[in-house]
Amino acid sequence: MLNPEKESLFPKKITTLILIVSSIFLHQALWAQSETTKQIGFIPASIGEVDVAFPLLEKWKISGQVDVQLVTQGAYTNSNPYAYVQRFVVRPWLIYSGFKHMKFYVGYARNKKYEIEEAGNPEILERRLILMGTYMQMMPRGSL
Image (cartoon, rainbow, N blue to C red; front, side, top):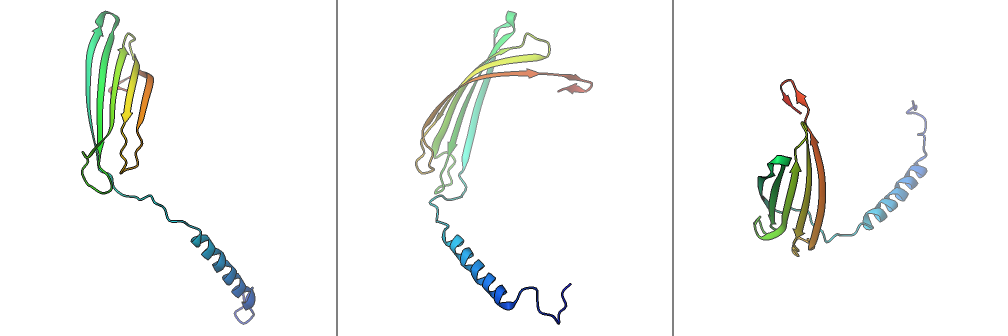
């Protein structure tokens, strides 16, 4: 512990020099930050989806499903979640359920994203091939 009657660990001149140099560097670091053209805010959105499942070949335990999704959004300047169509997705599926606790899915997704200039969204077309499987484990009070 320092004795209050003795001189401090750093002389006053060194302490003053350290404060001046650190304030110059801090000022330069803060000055170097540029203003951005991006803004943070709330963009209202709405998602609607319809899924339809149907049997195809009951003998082979193959069924089908089609999912259709529509996403709309507003922009920073309005509060209307239906102002622009942002995305339209169609996903057909084939589902094989021939095993006791397993299902296998093969799907295709066509995801059309529309340009919304006001929000900065570019136009994109995605096509995806989807392979998926599920396993169900029987438990004493349900399934997992």
